[in-house]
Length: 504
Image (cartoon, rainbow, N blue to C red; front, side, top):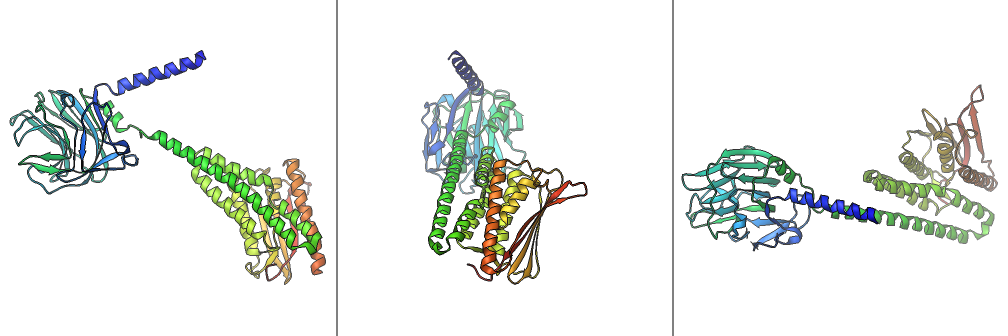
């Protein structure tokens, strides 16, 4: 308990020190979060007229104030003397949408303005505007007609882009920063004066002689009663998104949504497979023995560990923020599952669909293990893959067996070769060959070996039944390849399958 209390106290002290140092001399901060014109200190009477709320520089909705570029569209920050320090700094973000050429008088669109005198000209106590003739930002401060300072940005000021502007002033200098960098600095040599009771306006300069307006957005207006330094200006420019907690929450919600989707997908797959199996049983009561073999094959066609490990791989990609990989993996995985479910409806499958399933499965295994395996698939030139149908799920268990038993444990080049040739019009010859460690050297768990052996036994039984049905000898042969020293060179599997020209 004492340890936890100490940690909390240290955190609060550090947070307080950071806040004090980071906001020393800050007398006002105005923002527009959640579509509200707000003074964070609740001290000043701020009013907005004919404005709307738009995205800020971070993309947060309703978090910046948009001015229409017309006489009645502006913000009044109030007339408090606190907002008019003799020595101070002004920081704000601006987004200039269009230069406003209509109006009269000084050829500059006002962004922030308050007066030093009642005269029509040379009356800027401090002023930030956009000079639409030179297309630069301009800064003014005036003591009298004889004592005034005007400066311009030296770099082009891009339209329709957020910019951070900081103006600092004291008796000696007027300084301008743009996007965190020093832009201009001129000697001032007079004390700033302010017209008592005059308001500070955002987006408008209205008088009988000078009537100009601002069309664009403003955000995060800060006024200090001291001259902030270059490091502080850079810190303001690089300030993070204040809604970053919302970003984290949104990411967590997204991750939970993906997890819920995955759980629902597993549940759907189980229900769907169960429905398909039950339908098969009902439709084929007269072929009970063949049906039993078919159901066993359906259950053995894809090791359950593959499905759950694949889902876990997707989850790991999400947790490690590899969202692009998660999306690719999930897309390929869902397509494979859909293809498998569709193929279970019939006893046979086109060779084109069987090859598609195999390619999707190989792509997923390559993504999952990040292993570089050379896959070589050859189909005879006389084979019409779209119009040749074979018993489904006769090839995939052997491909899975080659990867798990033979290639994953092998060092060096890994090659898996598949070949399909027609022996005659009713028989297809299939070759599956790898250069892995072989069956005797495999280090895969006994549980996986048992499930793989069970699937192979079911395939053998199906081939025997089909041999009796079609009066043709369909076979399966597994060959362990060895060299002269009886060292394993991999495994070769030869299968002869019945083919038809229509789907059963």
